[in-house]
Image (tube, rainbow, N blue to C red; front, side, top):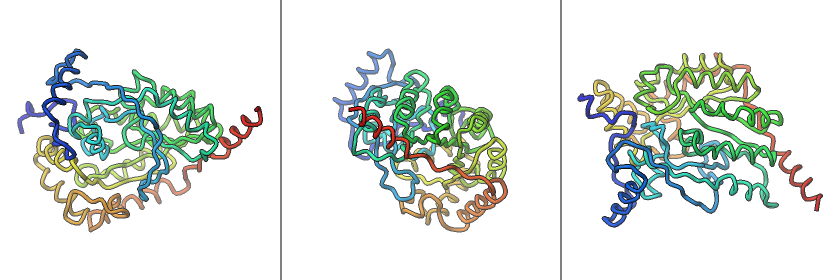
Length: 357
């Protein structure tokens, strides 16, 4: 392996082909001109924030095995650069690559708080937990600058509406004041993603994420302040972090987590190519072994999109992983459980507002 061939601080190592269309010369030239106007040379390893203006912000989730009914994403693309991230494929819908573009071209939805408020004020809207973020991390580095997630939390608090959060960034502690207020009425649940206890693993697998120490501290601080935390041990990747399941479960339980969840890695769409190139550069000594073991979990392929099978896998290696998760729950979470969020207060809030007129 030639260390100089690795793009520092990024997961993907190149821009894979967008399966939906070929970028025309005209579009490519426009993009390069835009980069120049922003003071960024197109070949520099920098992040570019691009404003977008969707008409709605909350999406209904139709996948039966995702575990959420509605989600919202303040940002498209994610600078964290997790090489395995399933959300990479969604960047192709915007005309970008699932590779480096996903990490370096971040689409910013500044109108998200206003759009959310419009939805929550509708007479027809029935309260149901909305999850930030079902796709990309709502506390990724862009949030420090734009504060869109914080403003959305204020909207949830104003309308007494339940909200879930998925993140791997300790920036969530910045909003502890709002989260504590939401928690008083059982209106918030937090999911922290922790995939390893090894900083060496984190640095290559999730290059721009918060350190493991800070993530565990986030679990502890949130829990001590009455905010329920579930930890996502996701994804489990054979021969990379699969041996850490029990130590991880023990560590997050001791930090205050009420439960754990997991998925087995699947490399659908462009992610298969991205992950394969990455592992041959980052872990060449075990690349073939890891790829073959992932295939073993998904019927001989890196990509498995079958509902009911894609998250948990199948075969002997998948069974070993799933059995370890069961053991971890029995050992460290026997008397713990996440609470069900309160949907009644939003209805009462709207009824009270209507009586004012």
